[in-house]
Length: 406
Figure 1 (cartoon, rainbow, N blue to C red):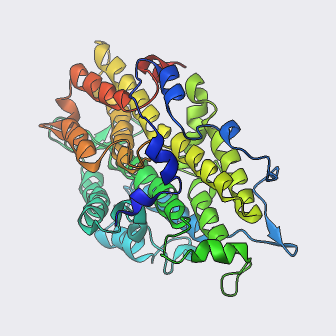
Figure 2 (figure 1 turned 120 degrees about the horizontal axis):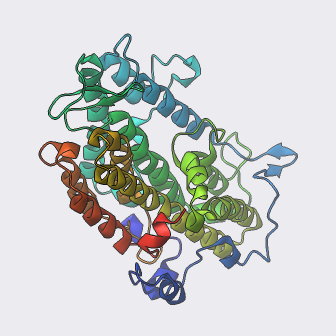
């Protein structure tokens, strides 16, 4: 059975009509039947707390420590990708990414590792082990290939890996920064996939065929030796992949919830996501599951806009540099590397109208192939960039003008 098909709001999805409205977002908003903003949630039967705090018998019921650990692991691995003196070894990366050992912060060593949770949601990969492993191998390659880039003493040029600018930028032979592919790709493959496609799917009242999560939550039956129900905990784990670190430490979803707030047509995403998380958690406590499901819709819809909007933003920035004859095209490669990672993340989005990603893995692979073809960024044209931008816009309910308006 495709777990993605038994989403929390399957009855709503069955009646939703999705029309690509890159030309008319108002028509889209009139044609769908799912909660898009927190104001669409009927929260009259729950009490939304001012902050994300929930207690039972005077003690917190919240625990997303595992998510915090993995987000910190991501940060240390990402920082190691720019350590040119000394250049990290394969063991340095494998130990941390695969085995969760050898971290400088010893508290990160243990059973929790990043690789096992990358591309591993029940929603997308329970019956698709091949794609899951392929995605993991993509991230393995970013780490392994970065060793040769860091070891190079060359200036980056077409077909030659090395450094560029005083920053410096570490480009592979095609102009890609592996660190950007790693971070931006994990926004989707780790944080979004686990939050939107794993833990929200595990909230499904009949996930295990017994209605046990709902029965336990109704009876306030707590997990063994814990102060939370399983349903409460799964919600908090989804929350943890978004808010598990302080905002100034995070390099995945929360970082771009804040960055995207500078774009006028996306400046309400952060508020919608945070308030929906609070309302949904309060709904679980109140055993108001329709409210919970509406909050899930809002979170999935809003977070899924982030990789599309940021991919378009960085592609357009690169195009502007390409069009400026006074600049070196390599000045655009950092933006293209960010766009590369955000495009990769599109396969982990969740379209509440269909219960599927906005882009299938094969579609994302095809877009990545455009960026990698031949000599990669060195061969990329402004027409190629326009084609990628238009393809992304066509799947969403905002126009290109809205996506680019500052």
